[in-house]
Image (cartoon, rainbow, N blue to C red; front, side, top):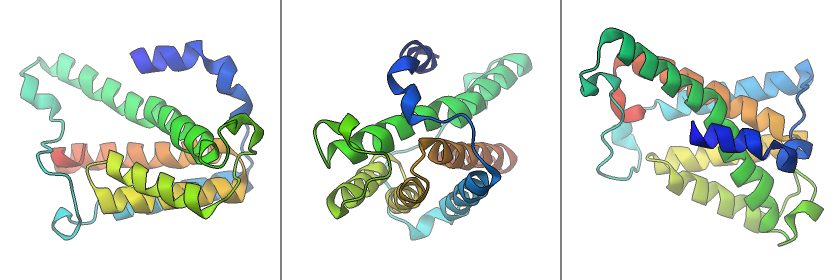
Length: 179
């Protein structure tokens, strides 16, 4: 909730990077990218490099009432679907991707490309996530989407689709390590 409140408070600082209107031409590749990352993300863990010690998030482990657990799941899904995509895309693709091109990152247009920034952000994005290889692939896909669309909103939508799908998958399969 704190991150959501901070994003709301500072929205004037990043509003220029996010267009609230996406055309169907922009939405379709974003949704496709999000679904592609989701499919790649749920590949069996045995085949992918991961950070050890990740136990996942089991909302039932707290022993809360049914209503409390459902509320926790709802907050978790909303955060993963709305707050996390905005926060991560602002950091990785709006800030860092451009900062690695020029320290005065606001002068660098969204979707600008250099191999150094592209590869660095993809690798760092992967290292941030439990599933390193899939995280790098996700970073590559989201970077390519930004380069193609020159619009951060498509990346936010793709990331939100991935996270919503992953949340639904985890709840259905009880694969808490994926959450």
